[in-house]
Image (cartoon, rainbow, N blue to C red; front, side, top):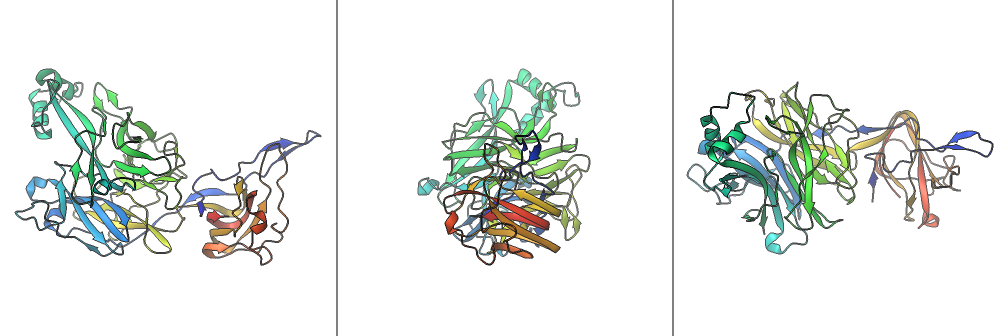
Length: 505
């Protein structure tokens, strides 16, 4: 199994030491290397508005690769039906040619001959995942936000946002920024609201049963745009990454920064209060917010978690996509503060893009992540070009981030147990670039010098160059590691003008 270099987790940090004479020395520090986010290649548009119910807006293409079939759930709306939003569905055998099955579930424009699943007013599908341990009729699970209105402490099922906003207008406080209108609505009319995360289950991913009890109640904090849920097989827990506003509660309303928070538990519901896990920090531009989570698993490596958050640049009124990485789902880092998916398009430049789960194989060599692009910017009016078209962000396998030596560098990994087969490397070199690989004694305590193992030194290593996804490393033509099976070792990479993306030993 390849282990990607997404952060510094697998890299020996080095150590300052002193010998018996008091002379200081450094124990194998990293030299001349950095983490470099690899910008995605964008595909042609694979899905654009064709039907009447898609002409106003399409967004958030959630994709599952389900038994060889690419299945996609997405938001959509048209000019009819008062601009109401719907959950749409499409499927594909290759990820590029998509069919809209005639489902007959929802009426639009006087007919049910369409690929619509439900109205957002009934249940807004924010994300879909497969629960491997559920009964067949609940194999698919989904989450979505809902606002619950109360009048004098009792749920008012007839109240909706249109009526609630009218009550706000009736207070006469809407134009006074020093007054919290929602608080006045509660005082004058006894009406308040909570935002909850609803759950739904399905046997086929098409016909959904909405659960009566919300999965979690987040009070009056926001849940708009994107919320993502998943099942974590390594912990046996359900998790949800939710939209939030960091440090937003004050008497004037929501004035904080958009951010991502997490909740979950062993059951699909009865979740505790969410905790913030990804926020803009001092390394970000002062005007940036974290807009959406786009959480997903790293393919084939259960202990790795990914987010592709859309970052809202307030002053530019644009949103591009960065990468965040976690080993436990709670503590997140971003290897670089730069877009991994950029705003470029065939028509020049998008105003906003938002990625959506999941990162899935497109073929034997490439992975794809779906994203939607719109040409209008966040705080500007509609553009003349389509408001929502879907593309793939594409990388070769394991090539989201590179351990890069722009000139010449050296780095040693932390100890690992050799599996006794071969050492394989996913790498790329520039002209005049090269890589040599050593297998060395692991960095351990007490402090000792790290030494190459006999037969696996840099002097004996065959030089690697070129562009390889799964290259077998050799030393004087030999690759067999059977003599090291079960032993703790480390790997030292000597690199020049080279990138290493992942390694298996």
